[in-house]
Amino acid sequence: MLRLPRFTLIDATTYANAAQLLRDHGAGELDPAKGTPSLRVMTVAGGTDLFPNMKRRQFTPEVLISLQRVGGATRLAVNGTLEAGAGVTLATLADHPQVRGRWTALAMAAISVSTPQLRNAGTIGGNLCLDTRCNWYDQSLFWRGAEGFCMKTHPEVVCRVAPSSRRCLAVASADTVPALLALGASVRVEGATGPREIAVADLYRDDGIGFLGIGRDDVVASVSLPDPTGWTSTYMKLRDRGSFDFPLVGIAAAVRWDGDVVADARVAITGVGSRAMLVDAGAEALRGGRLEDDAIAAAADAIHKAARPMDNTAGTISQRKRTARVFAERALASLRQS
Ligand SMILES: Cc1cc2nc3c(=O)[nH]c(=O)nc-3n(C[C@H](O)[C@H](O)[C@H](O)COP(=O)(O)OP(=O)(O)OC[C@H]3O[C@@H](n4cnc5c(N)ncnc54)[C@H](O)[C@@H]3O)c2cc1C
Ligand code: SF4
Image (spheres, rainbow, N blue to C red):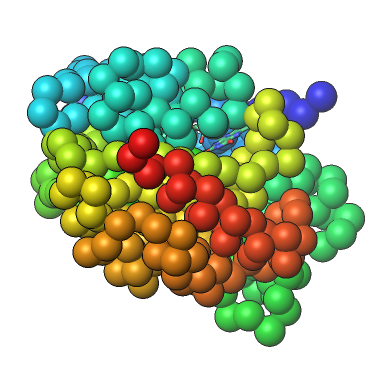
């Protein structure tokens, strides 16, 4: 049995307080041994990803700032728009009738995350900030010690997947992120300079280590989604085990209708790079016409081109690349109006 390392747990009362506590304990400072931002202090929400990672010693923070008791963290306001505190659980989003009916891609993505137990504890904030994954990294300390460490935990070592790569190529694997991209979501972040709003499309960097475009002393406080009137949306993922697993490829698509013509569209992909991304060329292929086979094929071509998987998760490169096209076709075809 893998045991957790020792740590001190501090309860934050607000997200601003959590950001302050992170700074007080040295978040954002450089780790003198590694020359990378310090992981001496981290936040924990549901702990469904963080604790297994700590057991495998992927990181060993001395201090954890718990977001469990943050006031208003689980507030979910659904009117024309949707505003969810970062502590809203994935189960809540997956089960909510209005989320399912109006922001369908988000509910579909949330229900596809791991297992019922983990969806009951796992939060939307934790999913947005989920660590990137790699076959060389998501292993026990014993395994990594025997096989050899890699750049993600030991900056002086090469990347084992692509030894000539100057950056880590670990894979974005959070299911809700492509759905939030397709739905035009933004997040409110609390940090040293107070609260600020960031589009989800601007939240990530193409870097398996520094994958979040916010500081280590920043905290995601809430997620906002615009009014989806006129839009339909969906999410589809390929995974090893149908009962629970991370996405090998995840595709989210949203279409705004003007009669039977696509007035606007967004398509997003995850699982094939260090960040989930909108594929603008895919959306462009759909705008201004009916959702006919040729438009779908052109959009799927663009998504196939954008997918650049590496050999660092389950599934082969060619399987994941091909899946990007096939799932894009299926996702878009499912949005056709009957
Ligand atoms: C067996 C298993 C299967 C899984 N399958 C999937 C899957 O299919 N799809 C998927 O997407 N995920 C999967 N997960 C991962 C995880 O369960 C979910 O991503 C979950 O949403 C994480 O939320 P959490 O609240 O538990 O985050 P935590 O584990 O508490 O935190 C995750 C990370 O986010 C940071 N964090 C948390 N909240 C915030 C915040 N408000 N602001 C800034 N940083 C924050 C933490 O510091 C940590 O780095 C799986 C996990 C396991 C163990
Ligand atoms: S992509 Fe390379 S550096 Fe990143 S976790 Fe995998 S092996 Fe390590």
